Amino acid sequence: MSCGRWRGASPSSANVLAVGTKPEQTLLYVKCRTGPPGFRGLIASRLSELNAPGKPRFIVLIVGSAETGYVASQSDVGARTSSGAWALSGDGDFKVNECGDPGGISHFRSFDAFLDLALPTLRGAAGR
Image 1 (cartoon, rainbow, N blue to C red):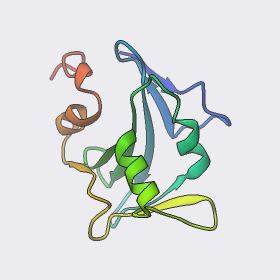
Image 2 (image 1 turned 90 degrees about the vertical axis):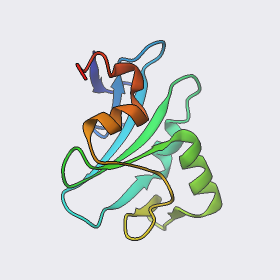
Image 3 (image 1 turned 180 degrees about the vertical axis):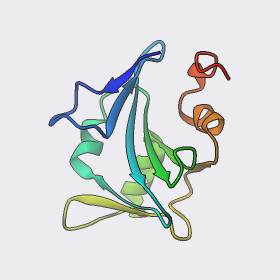
């Protein structure tokens, strides 16, 4: 298994990871918050950049423990940004709040659940 910064990010960002999945890399745009409630600003230009066809892409919003958070697929992100569920602010970020409903995206409470949602092909590689 390989994982590192996505080389296609411009400028380079530690928040965008490329995970060596088959047949294509999976891209993860990861945002962390050490404690609840989680609040995220997803950079609109970064979301557009991640729209490259052919690669699975997910937004991962971690809250507190690295094993707790939310996963949104590219279609989830598109639906929420186009409907206004995630509002674009004046600073160019889409705001996602954990308070209440963060937009109906998938919640995980363990690393196994995260793998099931975003990286199911790696479950065997992770020894789980």
